[in-house]
Every structure is written in C-alpha cells, then in structure tokens.
Image 1 (cartoon, one colour):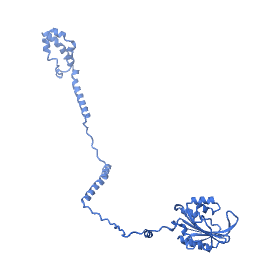
Image 2 (cartoon, one colour; image 1 turned 135 degrees about the vertical axis):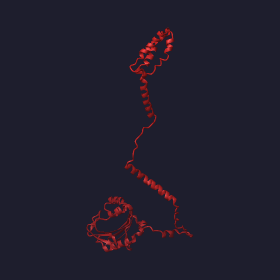
Image 3 (tube, rainbow, N blue to C red; image 1 turned 90 degrees about the horizontal axis):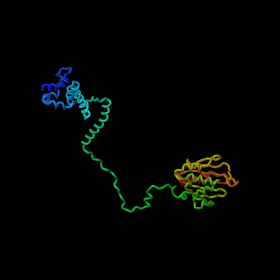
Image 4 (cartoon, rainbow, N blue to C red; image 1 turned 180 degrees about the vertical axis):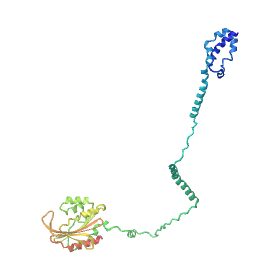
Length: 322
C-alpha cells in the first residue's frame, strides 16, 4: 500500500518542487483525493490515461498559477470600457461665457424683457374709449330733381370738346363761300392735304401727328381768299403736332394777335407761286392754340395782305375759343 501511494504521489511531488517557497502556490485541486487514489487497486491506476495524470501537473506550475491575476486585471479593464460605452460620460471642463457672448445675450434679451414689461404695464391700464365718428348726415330732396338743372349746376365741359363748327366765326355778308371740304363745315385729313403742294406727304404728316378732326369756314372777296381753321389733335400728341404746323419764318414780318401773347402773325414780304401753277400770290397766316385745338387763319391774295384786317379776323376767332 505504501508503495502504490508513493508511486501515485511521485508525479505530483516531482512537479511540486518550485523555485519559490511553497506558501505562494495555492494547493492543487488534485492533492485532496490523493488518499483515495492510493487505496484504489493498482490495475485501476494502470488503466488511467497518461493525459489525465498530466493535468494536475500543469495546474501546479508557477507560470500557470499567475494567469488568473492577469486575467482579472484585464477583465477589470474590459469592464471599465464597457461602462464607458454604456453611456457614462466622463467629467468635462465647464466653459465660461466670453464678453462677446454676454453682450449678444444682453442685446437679444433686452428688447424681449422690455417689450414684456411694457405689454404688462399697458395691459394693466384701463381701456381708452375711441372718439365717436363724425360724418355728415345724408339728406335727400323731397322734390324730383330736374336733370337739366342738375347738369347746369355741375362742371361744364370745355367748349373745344363740343361741335367745333359752332366755335367758328360767321362768314361776312356779301362774300363768296368757298365750300371747303364737303360743304358741311368739316374737313377730313385728305381735304386738308389737298391744300398743300405735296398732298401725299401732307396727308402722312397729319395722320402721324395725331390729327383728330377739323372744322373750317372760308370766303373770298375779289381776288383775296380767307380761311379760318380749327384743327384738333389727340391729347398725347397735341404739343408736338402744333409746333410742327408753324412754318418757316424766313422772309416774314412777325407780330402778335392783339390780347394774346401766345400767338403769332406771319405776313410774307414777297409774292410766292402756287405749287401747281406759275401764278403768284401773297400769303399771310395767324396761329394760336387753346388746349388741343390749333387755330390758324390764312389769307391768299394777288396783292399784299392787309395786316390789320388779318389781325381783326384772328382776334375775333380767338375770343370765341377763349
């Protein structure tokens, strides 16, 4: 019995000789059942595999005994890493607000706080009643209104917006009617263009200058012809069209219509030939404007034109417009 127990303990005894004192090595787990293995038959020991006997030997080596300490330290490190990953925040440094940030906060918060205080003060005050609305009361006449009387009381339209023929002076008695246009007192653009040498050019100029309508009256005395024209243009083109109607003043004697500084009287000093003949004549014209209406009085005569007679006709026609 002692021999078998000694033989069973030899492997453990050989492996249990360390280089350090045995107190630092924990007791091997296989030493406690050593007595039981000693009481077992020898043939049972012989059948035990060699690998099973080597396991206690490896567990009792000093190098393997130190492994649990290293694993414990590493395990604690893993636990710290897992704790950080789970959401535990590390300690951070507290940032201090700078001067710029404090000024920005004051700029933003100042109006808000002031507005809130002002709103609170205003809300605490009693409501001020608004003044009563003052409006004239509508009154209606008990009698039926006469349309003619109402129209007469209202603003009257300009006389140049009505029938221009009613504004023309009357043909003097004892004179010959020239029957201008169709003889009804109206002249179209082509009728007016026929009085010029180049009728086609005159017609295009009238249409492009904003020509609207024209009323005219004419008469003749002996060898002298008189024509009074009231030509109306569109409002947007009246000024330019009227300035274009003023002929060249070279070789003309100029003056004004009596009582009208915004006018012009032109009397030719020399005789001129008609465009379609060799016959010579003297020419004169008086111009004035009211609104969109151009007044021009023309005289054609074989003899020099009497200026005073032309001024009288122009003055009487201007008074009817004014």
